[in-house]
Length: 231
Image (tube, rainbow, N blue to C red; front, top):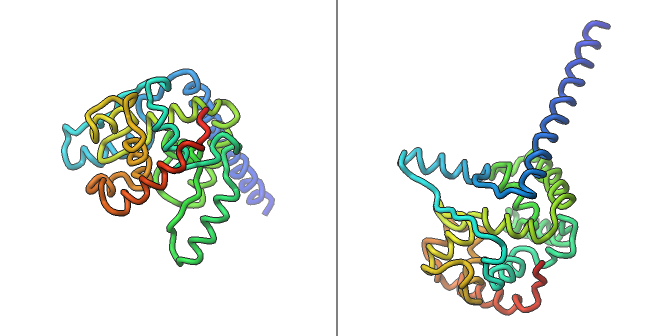
């Protein structure tokens, strides 16, 4: 029995060490990406694999642009649509999460997420689209790292350059070129709002970006944009 207990303790110690080293690996990348732009995220890599399963020659549409070359309107629209308390919270909108939970319970299914821009960025950079408890826990840890080490401007810059906007389309520049044939710097208010409302399900919404639902949501976001606080 003593030998079994000893083996269990050793196994637990190794598990703890593995978890710590794994978090240090994430932390190292968070520090690196504070100063250097990510060319490929975990989510982008997964989408590329899916595309290349069907077409080995497939490539992502992704062009990095600096923060100042992204339309102010798109920054406002993303915050108004996805995370209206972005500049105020520490990575988690507890009130928004509670409202999303109540809405999901009322509907009997998941219809609202409540994730902040920081949480979405943590998922996009390192994790998968799965909704397992382990993935959500890891997302929370990485979100704390990002919020601790980056300022809000950097978080929004990396988010807008790496978020998915359609089949194989990532980042504001690729999205602006894909839907409007203009650079991200020249997006109008209406164009920015429409792109922002596509974010929850871009591959579905790109099939009909002018649907009645998206038209309605676009007008709502347009009305909220003037009050959106941009870093």
